[in-house]
Length: 112
Image (cartoon, rainbow, N blue to C red; front, side, top):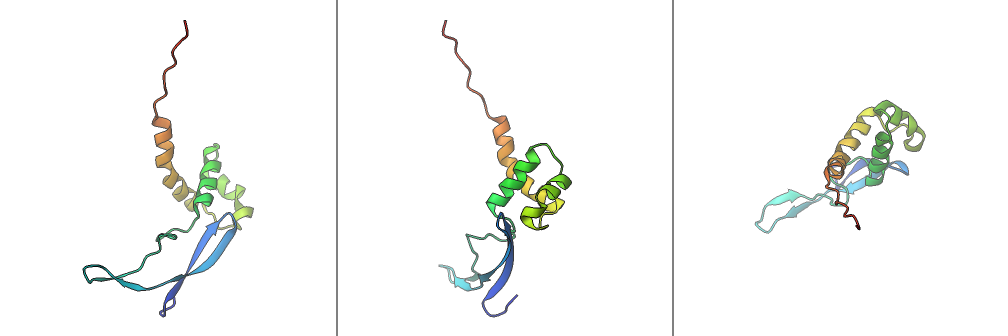
Protein backbone atom coordinates (compact mmCIF):
# COMPACT_ATOMS: atom_id res chain seq x y z
CA UNK A 1 0.00 0.00 0.00
CA UNK A 2 1.34 3.36 -0.97
CA UNK A 3 1.03 6.12 1.61
CA UNK A 4 0.96 8.82 -1.06
CA UNK A 5 -2.35 8.55 -2.81
CA UNK A 6 -2.97 5.04 -4.13
CA UNK A 7 -3.15 1.38 -3.23
CA UNK A 8 -2.91 -1.72 -5.35
CA UNK A 9 -5.89 -4.07 -5.64
CA UNK A 10 -6.06 -7.41 -7.40
CA UNK A 11 -9.23 -8.19 -9.28
CA UNK A 12 -10.07 -11.42 -11.08
CA UNK A 13 -12.31 -11.53 -14.11
CA UNK A 14 -12.80 -13.61 -17.21
CA UNK A 15 -9.67 -11.83 -18.49
CA UNK A 16 -7.55 -13.29 -15.66
CA UNK A 17 -6.15 -11.58 -12.58
CA UNK A 18 -4.90 -8.01 -12.83
CA UNK A 19 -3.49 -5.57 -10.32
CA UNK A 20 -4.91 -2.08 -10.51
CA UNK A 21 -4.07 1.10 -8.64
CA UNK A 22 -6.97 2.63 -6.75
CA UNK A 23 -6.56 6.28 -5.79
CA UNK A 24 -6.81 7.30 -2.15
CA UNK A 25 -8.23 10.62 -1.11
CA UNK A 26 -10.02 12.35 1.71
CA UNK A 27 -13.23 14.24 1.00
CA UNK A 28 -15.20 16.63 3.13
CA UNK A 29 -18.93 16.01 3.69
CA UNK A 30 -21.55 18.76 3.68
CA UNK A 31 -21.40 18.82 7.48
CA UNK A 32 -17.63 19.39 7.46
CA UNK A 33 -16.52 15.88 8.45
CA UNK A 34 -13.63 14.36 6.55
CA UNK A 35 -13.88 10.76 5.35
CA UNK A 36 -11.99 8.50 2.98
CA UNK A 37 -13.20 8.47 -0.63
CA UNK A 38 -14.64 5.13 -1.80
CA UNK A 39 -14.90 3.95 -5.39
CA UNK A 40 -18.40 3.07 -6.57
CA UNK A 41 -16.97 1.24 -9.59
CA UNK A 42 -14.88 -1.06 -7.40
CA UNK A 43 -16.58 -1.64 -4.02
CA UNK A 44 -14.55 -2.61 -0.98
CA UNK A 45 -13.60 -6.27 -0.76
CA UNK A 46 -14.69 -6.99 -4.33
CA UNK A 47 -12.15 -9.32 -5.85
CA UNK A 48 -14.22 -10.80 -8.71
CA UNK A 49 -16.00 -9.05 -11.55
CA UNK A 50 -19.76 -9.61 -11.85
CA UNK A 51 -19.17 -11.63 -15.01
CA UNK A 52 -16.69 -13.91 -13.21
CA UNK A 53 -19.14 -14.39 -10.32
CA UNK A 54 -21.90 -15.28 -12.77
CA UNK A 55 -19.65 -17.77 -14.57
CA UNK A 56 -18.62 -19.45 -11.32
CA UNK A 57 -22.24 -19.63 -10.11
CA UNK A 58 -23.47 -21.06 -13.43
CA UNK A 59 -20.87 -23.83 -13.35
CA UNK A 60 -21.82 -24.55 -9.73
CA UNK A 61 -25.53 -24.62 -10.63
CA UNK A 62 -24.86 -27.15 -13.37
CA UNK A 63 -24.68 -29.74 -10.60
CA UNK A 64 -21.06 -29.97 -9.59
CA UNK A 65 -19.29 -29.31 -6.30
CA UNK A 66 -16.93 -26.47 -5.37
CA UNK A 67 -13.73 -28.45 -5.93
CA UNK A 68 -14.82 -29.51 -9.41
CA UNK A 69 -15.71 -25.90 -10.25
CA UNK A 70 -12.20 -24.92 -9.20
CA UNK A 71 -10.69 -27.55 -11.49
CA UNK A 72 -13.04 -26.70 -14.38
CA UNK A 73 -12.15 -23.00 -14.28
CA UNK A 74 -8.46 -23.39 -13.39
CA UNK A 75 -7.17 -22.55 -16.86
CA UNK A 76 -9.45 -19.54 -17.34
CA UNK A 77 -8.62 -17.93 -14.01
CA UNK A 78 -5.01 -19.21 -13.92
CA UNK A 79 -5.57 -20.90 -10.57
CA UNK A 80 -7.04 -17.82 -8.83
CA UNK A 81 -10.33 -19.56 -8.01
CA UNK A 82 -10.34 -21.61 -4.82
CA UNK A 83 -13.27 -23.52 -3.37
CA UNK A 84 -13.75 -20.62 -0.94
CA UNK A 85 -14.03 -18.19 -3.86
CA UNK A 86 -16.66 -20.46 -5.42
CA UNK A 87 -18.65 -20.47 -2.16
CA UNK A 88 -18.48 -16.67 -1.84
CA UNK A 89 -19.56 -16.19 -5.47
CA UNK A 90 -22.46 -18.59 -4.98
CA UNK A 91 -23.62 -16.82 -1.81
CA UNK A 92 -23.75 -13.50 -3.70
CA UNK A 93 -26.06 -14.86 -6.40
CA UNK A 94 -28.04 -17.20 -4.13
CA UNK A 95 -30.47 -14.42 -3.19
CA UNK A 96 -31.42 -14.01 -6.87
CA UNK A 97 -31.60 -17.78 -7.29
CA UNK A 98 -33.95 -18.15 -4.30
CA UNK A 99 -36.19 -15.36 -5.62
CA UNK A 100 -36.35 -17.06 -9.01
CA UNK A 101 -37.26 -20.39 -7.41
CA UNK A 102 -39.97 -18.79 -5.23
CA UNK A 103 -41.69 -16.85 -8.01
CA UNK A 104 -45.33 -17.54 -8.72
CA UNK A 105 -46.29 -19.02 -12.03
CA UNK A 106 -49.29 -17.65 -13.90
CA UNK A 107 -52.16 -20.08 -14.18
CA UNK A 108 -53.28 -21.18 -17.60
CA UNK A 109 -56.86 -20.81 -18.62
CA UNK A 110 -58.33 -23.33 -20.95
CA UNK A 111 -60.08 -22.35 -24.14
CA UNK A 112 -63.19 -24.50 -23.86
